[in-house]
Every structure is written in structure tokens, then in C-alpha cells.
Image (cartoon, rainbow, N blue to C red; front, side, top):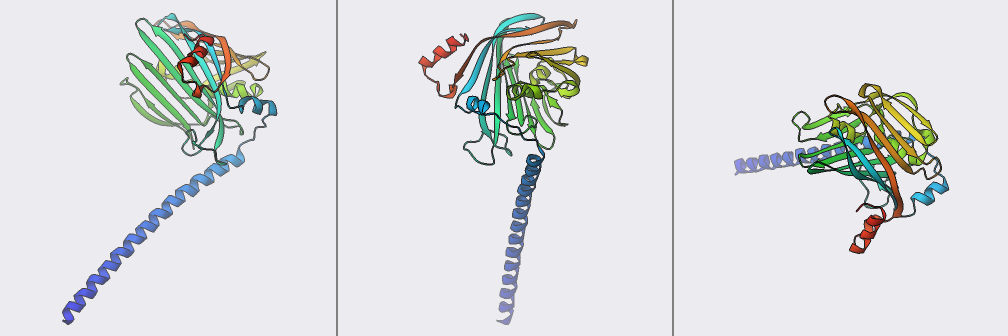
Length: 316
């Protein structure tokens, strides 16, 4: 009987020991998770405290916080495969709340959200028998002078599709996917140089803040993917004069000229992009000329009757 009591006591001690170990593991796990959250919050707080604030005028707020998006359509002459292809381009600008950690659009308003000016830039054109559909999204903070929070780009055509995403965290964190073997699936970190994609939103906030002179810049993600260039920063020079911003990359023999209204709301009137095409490297120029600008809460325009807006934009 004494032996059985001893065995029971031993089993009971082992049981409580196992429970104690499990509880300790849970506490360590919870502490680690909490530590990670604290570390992110601390880093985010430091970034907010060190970033220069941007003063938004009442005119800017009245225009961009009116509950509508700005939609501009453009006649597109796209240089592709050594020929100029007719098409259309659309720039859709809209303000929205952005989650700083997840870096996606917030479902609800919260004091911790980042207010951003989002640009969805689209292109549609045809090469021979098959069509191209290109879209680039840029999320640019409006209350602080920082780089874009996120840029994503996708191209679809009959050969396949490619997708790239850049997130602004400790570095620029890039994920890229392609149907080409030489590009395939890639992940990389890049230093925080100027993003060509963010210049298009920066113009809408304050053209005088655009970078000029000599600097390093990461070219438009659309250009990088469709020309199969290495994704990195390149030496660049830029000038601004009378509503025209020009950025040039000497080593790429590429230049982009953005024409915008020098008066608020600094609408994009058109642009050109010139770089070598084909095997012989002959320079060709893509040109976009504005057709129409409207303000609309387009996300609610889903009926057949609303297709009249596409006719107004001359997209049909």
C-alpha cells in the first residue's frame, strides 16, 4: 500500500511538472509576441517623430477629402516592340486610410492609420494579336514627408503576367514574381532611395518639393519589369520648370517628362517616356495626352447606366 502511495505521489509530481513547463512555454511565447509588437510600435513611433510634417492647406483638404476620386483619361501612344501602339491610360487619385503595419487599406478609421494619397495608374494597348493591361499602385503619405509606404505593379498579356511589390519598412522590401525563368520569384531589400513612382503623387501634394539636381532613384516598376532591367537605384538627374518635371537616367539612356498644371490642384496634363527599344537600341518615345478629368466616387458607379462616365472619359 505504501508503494502505491509513493507511485501515485510520483505521478502527481510529474503531472504538475509538465503543466508548469507548458505554462512557462506559453508565457515565453506571449512575452515574445508582445515584445515584437512593442518593437514595431517603438520603431513606428521613432519614424513618426523624426519625419518632417507636411502642412496641408485648407484648399488641398477641401479638394481631396470631398469623398470623391479624381479620374483622368489620356490618349496613349505606347512604344513597344519597335512600334508605337495606340491605347488609353488612366490616372486615378484618391485619399484613403492605410494600416502602417500591414500596409493595406484600412477597413475602418483609426487614429493609428496613415492617411495616404493613392494613385492607380493603368494602361491598355494591343501588340499585334494580343493585348496588354498594366496597373501600378502607389500609396504616398500626405501628412509626413516620407517615401511612399507601398508600391505594387502588375502586367498582364497573353504570354503571362508579372507582379512586383515594394513595402517601405526598415529597408525597401521587394517581392517579385514573373513567368520568365531568369526573373521568376525574387525577394530582396533595397536602400531607401527616391522612387520614380512616388514622384507622380508628390507632384499632387507640392511640386516644389520634387528632387532636382543629381541623386539616385529607383525607376518606375513598370519600366523595370517590361524592359527586364535590374531592380535597383540608378544615377539620375532632374529639373523642374514651368509645370514640366524631367528626370533622366544616363546609364539607361532613359528620360521621363511629366507635364502638370503649375496651379493647384497640379493636375497631370500628360507625359513622355523615351528609352532604347529593340535589339538595335533605337530610342522611341511613349506619349500620353490628357483627354478628360472628372471627380467621382467611382466605387459606387456599378450600374449599366454608369457606363456613360466611360464615354465621357472617352475610354470606349
